[in-house]
Amino acid sequence: MRFRDACIPVGFLWSSPFARWQGPLAEVGSLELAVRVSGRALKERGFDPGEIGSLVFGWTVPQKGIFYGAPTLAARLGAPGVTGPMVSQACATSVACLAAAAASAAPDPTLVVAADRTSNGPTLLYPNPSGMGGAPEIEHWVLDAFARDPWAGESMVATAEAVAAEEGITREELDEVTLLRYEQYRDALADGRAFQRRYMVPVEVPRPRGEPLLLEEDHGVHPTSEEALRRLRPLSEGGVITYGSQTHPADGAAGALVTTGERARSLSGGEGVVRLLASGVARVERARMPKAPVPAALAALEAAGLGLGEVDAVKTHNPFAVNDVYLSRKLGLPQDKINRYGSSLVFGHPQGPTGMRLIAELVEELRLRGGGTGLFTGCAAGDTGAALVLRVED
Image (cartoon, rainbow, N blue to C red; front, top):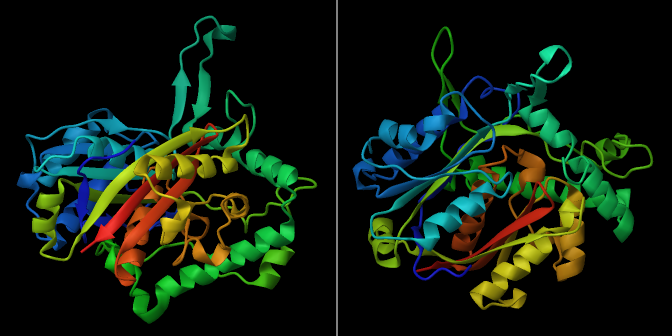
């Protein structure tokens, strides 16, 4: 999908720190987290919520009160006359939300927010009167989704193992890419986390007693080394994927303001705009999820009228290192040109907001180089991929 006139003011993409599940954000519902992070982000940027024209709210894990999620979020932020759709497309949620806002960009900005909490995921009971004794069917929303695609019949890690086997991707390659991603993430922590501070919004976490906890940086990123990666056992017999070369579930929130180019320039105060050029989606063969970012990226580039050679920076949602090995091989991209400053393989995956954070990092990487064209692509449940092409302009 190509966008006509959709822009984000420079500085108006943000993300909370991500916290490994069952960590410091485990008891903060994602709707509450969305309010806290979005409210602070807008206040820090001097933006009056009363100027919001519409809202798109992305989530994938049900939370208390989510039925009224979008209008509740708008009202609590100070825009009680605003409402809008809620979008849920697994790990592609951020791209879907931004695409929905970009397709109808208007001078009155659309607030795009994505938030999820994989911690303490709900256990759902579905009535089954005809079952034995009328016992209900039970589903754990998060764990069951990880464990099995109901159509393809495989777990997410099985899709990565299948791609690795078919493509001859070795354990050594995966460990090498994983180590590189951790080194890139450490670059984002240099100089007192100077890179992350460009977009990251701290979160105040209430506690039963005492002062609230201020979460200012990612929680639960384990230090790693070549020796430590080599010691890890594969997750499946005869496999190549370990806990080191896959991501971890997390909690977090992220957001952006989408509007027209003219309004974006006025809001950025002369700092430039992020022009959203096009999005692309794709679905690959059954139980081969890590392949999907490649055709999604190509679809987005085609919609934008650009070639890969015109792209200055690439970010991926890579729940498995397999994703990046496959993408590098198929698109001819060197690994050190992908995911500068880190990726979801390292800092975790809250699902809905993961793409938004990566897109925020993509924008800041381009700003540091003086502008340019960026590509984000990633996989999602159901052997799906979603991609976004953007350009940072003066």
